[in-house]
Image (tube, rainbow, N blue to C red; front, side, top):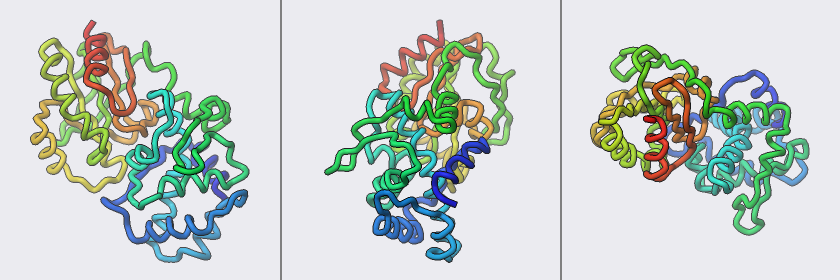
Length: 301
């Protein structure tokens, strides 16, 4: 199956794309990336079935190939979300952070695969020397019958809408649902362990809780490790929270919760919900303390 066909099938099925990988790049993933780096040619699509059947026979290599091509199809949505959220394209380093790409040059290779396939629309332009994205055609992504439909669902129309129903499990096994949050101003914070922008956000969230918690804002930290198949245990997550001084509500972001909130794939993502249960602000990616405070105050009005 070629890359374009694989992409459309994945999106048509409505399945969230998972960016799972062990901590650090596996040797198998390095071999796949090195092969692609050497063999990708302009105008020549990469045919997954040929690589699967004729090049990579070891199970761990095939698993790495599957992961990379899942990420390939996630890339346009990630780039468009970042462009809309920050007013600029993401850097290669930011793409690597979000998709957990640990092989040097791996983000560039994925972009080269996309650029090489003549059937994939030209969603962006890059600097010829640095490889960094210089322009993202969000309109082209939105106009695409598959990519655009998914993107509109994730970025458009959240503010002013009722917050999705929430039924998740805490680290201690307790169930957190809509009744326990009814009538409360809240921040639903989606993150995963080891996410660099999430790590930078941690002290800002502590400050936000200290300032606005007494006024009624509740921070609900929804960890996506299980949904993303990240091998961090509950004890490690709880220890991290203690070390950071978190006094938040801690729960797992299930695949259903991620999907209900627009198939969250940019981390961190923040949903500020007022006491009526209406989303008043959605923020994607790292935010300043002042941006978080303003959104929190809006939820408390």
